[in-house]
Length: 135
Image (cartoon, rainbow, N blue to C red):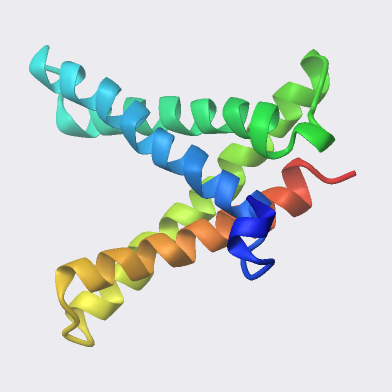
């Protein structure tokens, strides 16, 4: 993979992004049935987000950061809490940037959405590496 991207993009970032993409599927796999069973949107969205972040943490711990893998109940739980905190800030940045570009700068909704995702994703990658999987 490193040879394929030629060192232009860190392989770890590509793995982090791939895991994040799986997180979207996890999110929808929880959100859709929750909504179909009558759960209110806010509660269903909160549950889906909580599950997706946890799933992303465990996949990143096993795959993306396998060389810095957190092991043992204490380190894993602290890492999970740290990852939730990091991703919460990244989520706020994502929504804030996307909303600003869409509402204030008149960018198309999809450009605004992608910009938000990129900002949030880069934030989550950079800070989770510093705080969750530091060694």
